[in-house]
Image (cartoon, rainbow, N blue to C red; front, side):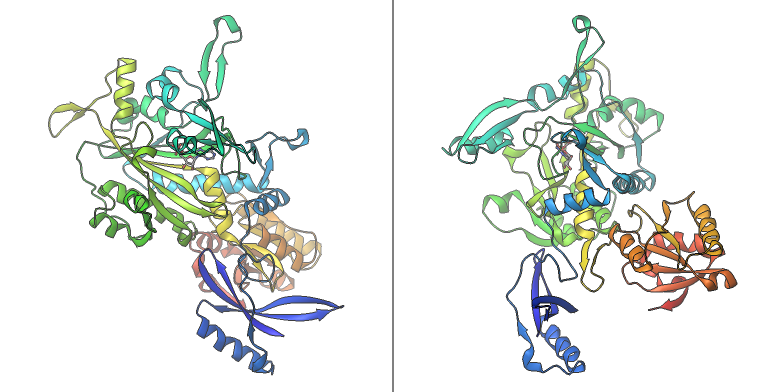
Amino acid sequence: MAFIIKKNIHGKEYYYLNENKRINGKVKTKTLAYLGKIRKEAEKRARDILDKRTVKKEEIKEAPEKKSENRGGEIKNISIEELATFCKRKGFVYQSAEIYGGLSGFWDFGPLGVELKNNIKKEWWSFHVLQREDTVGIDGAIITNPKVWEASGHVANFVDVLIVDKKTKERFKADKFEAEKYKSDPRFEVREEFNPMFITQIGPVASDSIKAYLRPETAQLIFANFKSVYENARLKLPCGIAQIGKSFRNEIAPRDFLFRSREFEQMEIEYFIKKGMSCPYKVPNEEILVYSAGDQIQNKEPRKMKIREALANKIIAKDWHAYWLANEIRWFRQMGANIDNFRIRQHLKEELSHYSSDTWDLEYKFPFGWKELQGIADRGNFDLSQHEKSSGKDLQIFDEETKTKILPEVICEPSLGVERAFLVFMFDSYYYDNERENIILKLNPKLAPVKAAVFPIVKGAKFEKIAEKIIESLKTDWNVVYDKSGSIGRRYSRNDEIGTPFCITIDEESVRNKDVTIRDRDSRKQIRVKITDLRDILRKLIENPGKFEESGKIFRK
Ligand code: GAP
């Protein structure tokens, strides 16, 4: 029997035509077709398909809605646990030192995970540093002079509170503001406050060693080096200093796979302006769910609007904040994330960090709820003035306009966790294709761990020689693999599952005509291209994935 099912995925409705068949006494469901997002059109399409199959129209019935489909649709909603299992099975991420039982809050990245992570960082750096005239990068030390953390307020004010659920015995962290709410609820016990910075010792002999910290954020190294970087790179306000690197926090309750870990990486920019300077850049034309502090206080729902509109209506107070929020959304969109799963949320006054006067978070709808993906804080001149006071060094710069010395302000600090971005790209690209009966990781080719798999269709030295030559010519630019084992179908599905966007196959004709077939992961279409053009074509396909059919002679649709 055939029937239409409606799936609700990330708040959107999708219709599919499914069919139940009894095989060996067991009822098996197969998806016959994806019918689109509009019910009427879906019904029409279903009738057309079934008419062709001469199945009676009366057989079309609607099955009860299923929220999360495990198998049987094109799109698959998966839990964080399922994603963790997939990541382990495919070699993306393992528990750190699993042979010893792992260690809570620490993760090791496998052969595919390290490639994906490196690609995320490379694309972030390219977009935020290399493609901008106003931003340069640094790479600061993980352990630095502990005075940095005294000046920044981390020693005194970076505090987590341990909360214990008396009923379930669950332990979790809250900030000081959240802890107040738990105090009035008898179900919870508000335990001790503690500082999540990891402490270490510099010097081998305990008696004359210095107590130091593993950095809890990369940002402070930007502030501590600000004056030198500003002068060396001959920066002019407004300007940014960026950094990617490890940060460490002794989290009370690391959880949700990579989401909250004790060792993670941050990609941060401190964007400096002269006080009052307006933003010269056009706010990118991005639309998103906006959740202002006012709407949260009044228990209203977030509203979908253009960021430009939010600025014009003073929901976002400052042009710089609107610009950076839209800029970050644009980066995620260009990298293939689904912006329908994103929103921006303003911090309530009580929630603000000790250094910030206004913060907006870019949040993502994780399977465990809306959570912070990236924070974008207005830090003012808190940090530079603290470091001036604490170090006794003049960190002011000369302002040509007023011919006076000024202390710049950080109008925005876009701060993103690499691992949280990693989760977003995995969730948004993870599909189960019922027809192929395998997972397809539809990662943007720029992020894909393996850019191309090369394999001969049939065994034979002459084909293998061509494959090896192709690998040789591509491997200086990209991570490409020579996949020899299993049937062709198995090789395609193995590569679909890890997100390899292109498979290059060699056959009898390749020997005669010196050409190969490129197969596109998502559409399964194939084009035929000359081996001599392969490198240039692959480059174009990775840079511009929408243009597959225009890149060669269509071989198979
Ligand atoms: N310099 C500002 C700062 O560090 P934050 O909101 O504490 O601000 C910024 O952290 C980002 O770092 C977060 O939005 C998140 O993406 C990431 N992050 C923070 N703590 C994390 C943790 N324990 N595990 C994974 N990522 C984390």
